[in-house]
Length: 275
Ligand code: UTP
Image 1 (cartoon, rainbow, N blue to C red):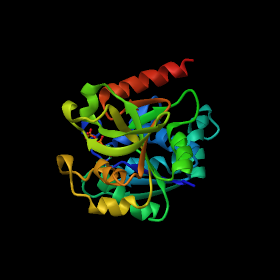
Image 2 (cartoon, rainbow, N blue to C red):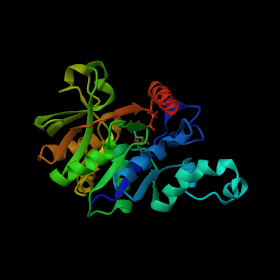
Image 3 (cartoon, helix red, strand yellow):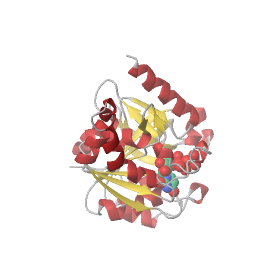
Image 4 (cartoon, helix red, strand yellow):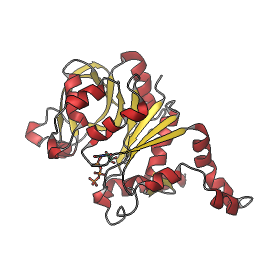
């Protein structure tokens, strides 16, 4: 049903300067794998085979990563190192990668709108922000959990988690009524609220299922917080029509857009690799 996953990856990643001066944030490796590859693997597990990436200037390394490197492969052919490219080669074989550029950083809503040309305007699609690295050691990945939920509810879905009240200012926050365990019908959404203006501590993280109507809604949405076109504002308009649910996902999420979260993820994956 949902076969396309959109990866908005046009941001500057200023919190990682100078590392991100000439290298995309999405290519920062946790252990030996770039962030965006974790996201692509999660999308494949969820049943997607078209990866639509919103890039920008200085992001060419992403395109190269998901392509064959003949010279390198020729060099290491037959050596013990050949196996290190097995996973990425299998990803390239399984998926189609499409790209378009967001020329100006006008916000996540604008980046998603730019994806219309890649995902089409007649079917639902998934969105992964690769700097939110998600794992579920106990079972299905977060996007797969959401795709299954889509089969039942057929509306927009946002992944949420509880955060300490003093951190709500970093997130889009939802308000809603619980309709099932871990599932809420969203009635309101606020982008990066101050503590006293936050309706709840249920924060939206970088996993979404969106229905194609979202493109018309984004088109009607005015720039919001920081003068950017916020996906939160577009989703809030849909929520007021009862068309958005929030899902408290099972698993862990690392905020790899911040240095602390990135280090935490690295420690976690290192520990896992040591058994
Ligand atoms: P962030 O605000 O976390 O990313 O956007 P950033 O701007 O790259 O990071 P900092 O704050 O400067 O360190 C969340 C996601 O949305 C994408 C980013 O690439 C990131 O994956 N995004 C954001 C876009 O693609 N375009 C935009 O205009 C804004």
